[in-house]
Length: 407
Image 1 (cartoon, helix red, strand yellow):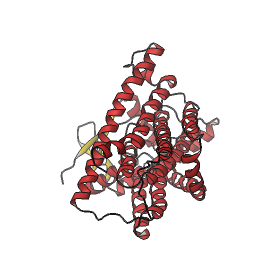
Image 2 (tube, rainbow, N blue to C red):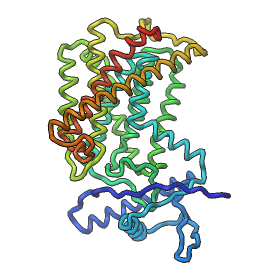
Image 3 (cartoon, helix red, strand yellow):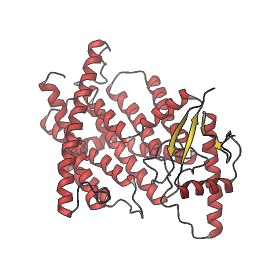
Image 4 (cartoon, rainbow, N blue to C red):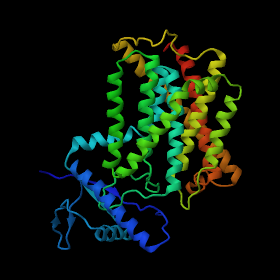
């Protein structure tokens, strides 16, 4: 069998959790190694292995899924980090590889910023509003918990990491798991009020899709099982607390005269009060993006409600979905394509303007990556950019569709 290798750069966490006592540090190190070995065992069971090592004579030494001791793991990790080398991995089960890589993408911010507007444009803005609200709540709580707890991700080796963008982020809890549970089950419980469908089928889809996203975090080596389980439980707890009050929150969001001010001020305040770290992490920027989209959508939905043009189905609820045929499918794809193009154009324009204005105010070049990571620049530029995206999604896109007869 021909073996195919893929390169994955290894990056260390900039910091690990601080432990005061030496004995406690040793215990945590051994426990972390055990957790990493469990993740590595799951990866190998799914056909993902570190590439075979090469001996000093140039011969290939086959990797064996053996029980790596804690000392070997820490020693090899130190060599890889100190020498700035990269590691390779071997895929022996390509169907599972593609399944879990695609599943991991379903939990990313990029997917949600594309998927949630599609719900708005093609199904029901009511559902999109609830999903955006829940997404913002669970993601903010999860991201803040990560940077307060400061628990490291699984170590390399023995784990193979397929993602490198979030190498400086901490691990507990898994926000992919939190988002998947929140989005899947919020959509399930809210849709039964609005759309006719078989609840059992929806439940199976929610369990399968959220389960795949959760398992993908183990497969990609980004989280331990405990990270994922805690993410599931925290998200379920938040959903259980908010679910009985959805109707009240909907009414306040759409009818209260204070709603726009609260929707703008509270997320911006929370972004500025995000926990400070001793190194740069993408968590603050990603959280700001999510909170800004939520704020923009909230203001937009409030304005639509005041104007009496919500673009929601007229009822009676639950409505019957139109049959899926070639015309309906083509119309949905066209809406998605046109809407996404509008959002991308909006993002590029708002980012170009906000970034240059802020960098000019602080006397730095807009191309200076380090300067753009400073809180006084990153938070307002990302918040203003994605606030506009939320407003355009909720207010402008459907009006454009009406003008060009796509609704």
